Image (cartoon, rainbow, N blue to C red; front, side, top):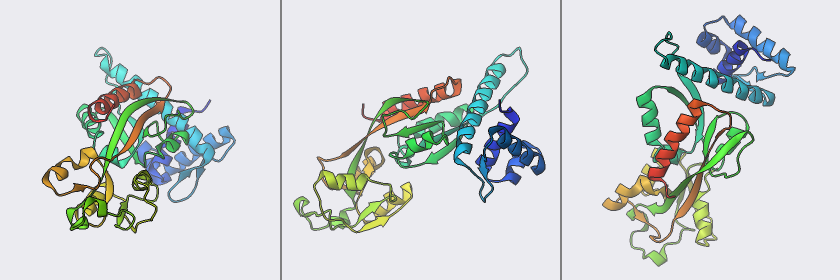
Length: 295
C-alpha cells in the first residue's frame, strides 16, 4: 500500500513540474521530497517521473498519479465533512479538481460553473484546455478527473452522461464578402480560420457543404483573438452561436449560410468512484448545460 505522504509528493512534483517548487509547496526539504519519490518508485518497482525540466510523469507514473489525486480528493471530502460539523475543530481544505474542457465551452455555457465555484470558494480548479474531440484522452491517461468531451463511450473507470448540443454558425465580417451574393460565396477560396491543427469544425462544415477545394488557412490558437480576427475580416470561421449573438444583431458579423450550422454533442465524463466533490461539481455542470445547450 502506497503511503499518503508519498502520493502527495508525486502529485506536487507533477503539478508544479519541479522538485524545488514541490518541496516548497509541501513545506519539506528537496532532499526529503526526493526520498519520498524514490521510496514510491521502489514500492511500485517502476520509474514514475522523468527527471526533466519540467518534471513529467512516465506512463506508469500517470497511473499512480491518478490514484494519488483520488486519495487527495477523498481526503478533502472528509475534511469538509468534518468542518461542516460545528462540534468538531475546523478541518477546512479546498479540494483540487482537474478538468479537461474545450475553449468554446469556457467562453460560453461553462462560465456560470466557474462563477459558482468562485462564489462557494470550495474548489481549486486545474483546467486543461483541449479540443472537445481530444479531452477524453486526458481522462484515459489519468491526467484529469472529469472532462467535457464529444465521446459518448466512457473512458475506463469513468461514467458518462449527455450534456446537450453546442450549435455553431459559419460567419465572417461583412467586408470579407462585400459585393458577393450568397450563391457567389466560395468557401474553398475565401481565407479560413482554425484554432489549431486539431480544430476540425471548419473542415466539418466544408464537408457538409461539399466544398472540395482547400482554402488558405490562418491559425489563431486563442478563443478571444480568434473571434477578433473574424470580426476584422481576416477570414471566416465556425463560432458558437452563444458567442456571436450580439455581433449578428449589430451586423458586425454575418452568417455565410443562414440555414446551416454545425452541431456538436457534448458529454460529461468523470471518475466513477464516489466523491461528494465530483458529485457536487457534476450537478453544477448539469444545471449550466441545461440552461445553455440544446437538448
